[in-house]
Image (cartoon, rainbow, N blue to C red; front, side):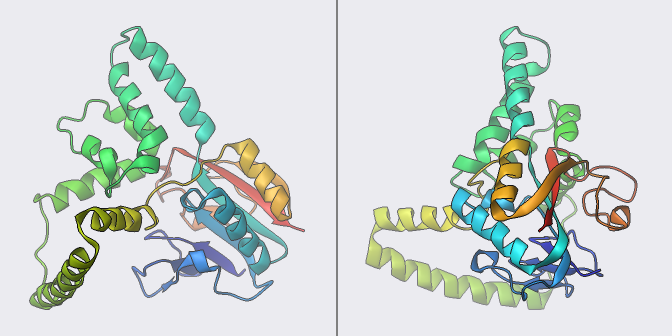
Length: 277
């Protein structure tokens, strides 16, 4: 089975072709997916991507799915994982109602659901208010957040603790030298641009760089809109799945949506599969 994992990050299987904007492992091919998919027509039996589609605009997302269709063999399977807009909306309304009635604990849950709806779409700095929420000690509603995000919440919280001085390993001398050189070159380039552009235009350039850098959410999907989009792209029989269910052979052995111990990696997701005609 030829299988392709797009925008894989650090979740990949070595028996698959894995592609991301930057490579974190020799098994991952670095490629800018905004340029298309770097494989020939009718090449893969399976195409999978998780929490990638929402980072494209509506128009770009349709174009990206057409590329997925192109590289699949006839009757090949696509599996798409995205944040569940319907579930976010329903939980927002529930948390608004309960917070308004002063139900214990639901003020924090309401704050979180507002962040889920808006922060990654409107933020102007990496991590936005989302990261600040995760820095809270003690964490006010960890059980609710873990239920929403799954293992990814735990990994993010642990990563923040390390990078903010609690157990961070020291970089090597070579890493320090390389970082210093890159920082110096970047500083020279940026200072030159600041002089040329002026402060106002420089700040707008920085904002534009960030907004186009791939971090923000540019569209969101529910099961109805994603199924329609897949059908419009040419796929047939779109069906919602769970993290553990799939029509992909031996899906459970790849541990892409679920950890080896059965915990769900991104519990705020919904999963949909369809076939190429």
